[in-house]
Every structure is written in structure tokens, then in C-alpha cells.
Length: 391
View 1 (cartoon, one colour):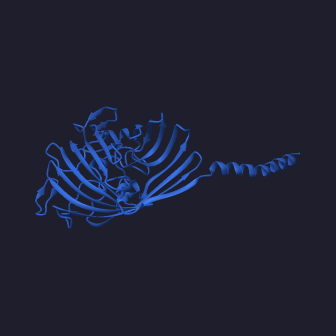
View 2 (cartoon, one colour):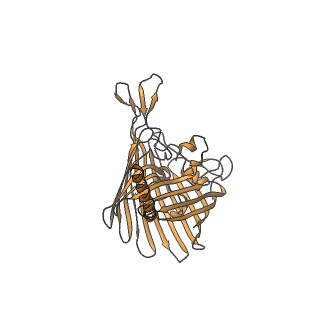
View 3 (spheres, rainbow, N blue to C red):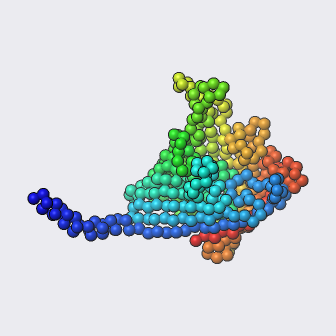
């Protein structure tokens, strides 16, 4: 009898296999897509050395190498199923390495292949109104992005350079209505993309509005970016933390007319005073005033013809209490600011190929550069020509 039952169950499984396979095929049936870009550029200073040990460049990310230089090769592959999918975004080249600068396997000197991963996440569309994503994704803060295909200007702003690049964690995107959206996330410390050995986490949120002429996003970030570590000198008193980071960021952009576009970005970032946590759980201030940065930028673009656009970015960026040490020259109180003007053209050679000529002028409150005579200077002017191919 037992053998008969086993045979019946076996036959039922054999009969149902095609139906199960068909169901799985319908459920898992999806599509692969591939996209990406490649970029190279030429950069030369107009009033400062471009070569040798005194070579100068704006203290922002990407596009800072002298002469004819490589940007990056970007390859993005996606698989989209009925309600689940995965995105794998790989980067190669100097721009790509700069984008993943804080990946532990990269900065640890292991030279692991993980340093080429710009984004890697899976997502689940729970409903028409809710999508969950888990993994490593580019930041939601700021106006600019890592890939040059997503920016009008080739060189990047100070706010983008010193804000987050990427996050690893879980986020939930909610569609509240046709125009409003909301995002909430729990993430590793900023730019710690591969794993988290600090046992501290960061919270993120975004409120979005999208209309017929453009969109506006209000972004928030809060959390401990460095964890805590033992303080054993001059005597063991427990653990120390540099304090928690808070950042609020507003990004907006609208079409003023069919040929004119206006974008705006402003951000404020502050790191609270540090703490010593003693074995008896007492907390003491160890650093004094909070540090950080803030800034604002305006983006103007005009469509002159089918193949030619021109635009300008004007940015003011300020550091207080050495919040971004090394970004620009600082005074005795650890404060400094910079006014940067970037004039950019976009010349469409073909649908996929764009030439980007650019003139940039940076003026700082303190000496941040040297001129051609190797004297300290507050000003730097440079010319750049980039070639960007997308597919």
C-alpha cells in the first residue's frame, strides 16, 4: 500500500511538472537591457601649472587630471521581471575609481574586483505604489550624478563632490499620487558600499514632487558615519565617536520655456561634536563646535539649435570649522568659501556622441592655488574638452 501511495504521488508530480514549469516561466519571464557610456577629456589650466609637482586643479571630484586623460567606461545591465529585478552597474577607469573611493576592499589595499561596482541592487515592486530596493545604489542627494551622461557640465560642483556618492542598505519608494512621492531608507555609513564593520547606520528620506514643467526633491540624511573606536591614550576611558552627520538638500529643475531650463541645488551638512563614552556610560564633549559645509548652485541651459546647447553653473560653497579639510584654503578659524563659475557647451555630433567644451573659474576666500609664478593665489581658471559616448 505504501508503495502504491508513493507511486501515485510520483505520477502526480510528473504530471504537474509541466504546469509548474510553465508557471515559473511566466513568473520569471523578464528582459535584459544593457546601457552605458565612455568618456575621455583634455584639461589645461590657464593661469596655473598643469604639469609637474605644482600641477593645480579644482578641488572637486572627477575631471581633474592634466592633459589628455581617461574618464571611465560604464556598463549597466538590468534584468526586469514581472515584479522583481536586479541592476548591476560597473565602472572602469579613474572616474570610476574615484566614485567608489571608500569601498573597504578598495581603500584596504586588497585590489579586489569589488572596486569596479558602482551600483548593485535587487528590487521588488510590491504594488503599484511601493517598491523595495536592497543593495548598493547611487545617492539620492544633490543635483548632479556620477555618470557624465547625466550631467550637463562635465566637471562637478563642490556640493556634489563633498556630499555622498553612494549608499548600501534598504530603501522603500512610495508613490503617494501622480505628483508626489516619498522614500525612506536604512543604510551603511555614507560611501561604505561593500560591507559595514562599524555597527552604525544612517537614515535617509526624500519627498518628491513632479509636475509638467519639472521636479523638486527635498532630501534628508542622518547618522553616525564613523562608528565608535577605543580610546586608549592617554588612558582608557571607553570609546570615541566623531559625532553624527545631518544633511538637508533641496534639488529642483524646471523648463522655463521650450528652449530655456533653470535648475537649483542647495545643501547644508553638519557633523555634531564628538563624544567619549566611558565604561560608566557618561558622555563628554571632546571637540567643541560642530563642523560641516553648505552651498548653493544655479544651473542655466539654453537650446540654441538641434545640436547645440550652452549653459552656465554658478556655485557658492562654504566650509566651517574645517568641515571639509583640504577642499579649499581655510582661515585661522577653519572657515573658507569658494565661488565657482562654469561655462559649458554640449555639441551633439550624433545621437550617441557629445563634445563638451568647458571653461571654469574658481575664486576662493583664502589662498588655495598657486599661479604660473608659483606664488599663492586665490584664483584658478581652466579649460576642458570632453568627449562622451553613450549607448
